[in-house]
Image (tube, rainbow, N blue to C red; front, top):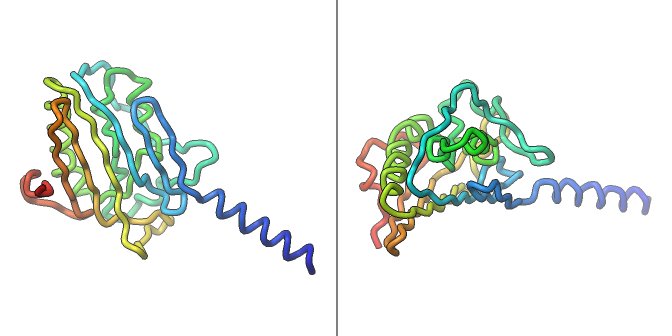
Length: 192
């Protein structure tokens, strides 16, 4: 009986350890990833003047060895995109870098109308701003205490908080609900 109890405790602790948050530096971005929620919790990256040398054509999201992530089944038959946190277009200076953005570590369960709407517009603004100054971006993915999940098991975030830091010391912070956002991007800017 004692042996069974010890084995059960070891098994449960291994399951808990395998689902802990992990921080990984991909070189072009850094991510803190929740294996339990199967989403990034925080992603940060820095941009400077853009050079476009590689396209995203033919690239697909890929899993990282030994890490529990979302997968294609989390994005089928629902309103969610594989939302890049560190945007592919921002790292098109090399084919190696743009491919790194297609890791499921960099992928969040993002409402398609947010991803293809104001989120995309703000990513374009980041690239434009980076033509004249260094731009650092910190994205926090925010979940309800008891989040809903996709049929594949990935948690669905409630909000995305994006802080953009400029080389001169200024910053903007934006809060987007994970749904269709039809206002101007600056309507989602957090007032200081």
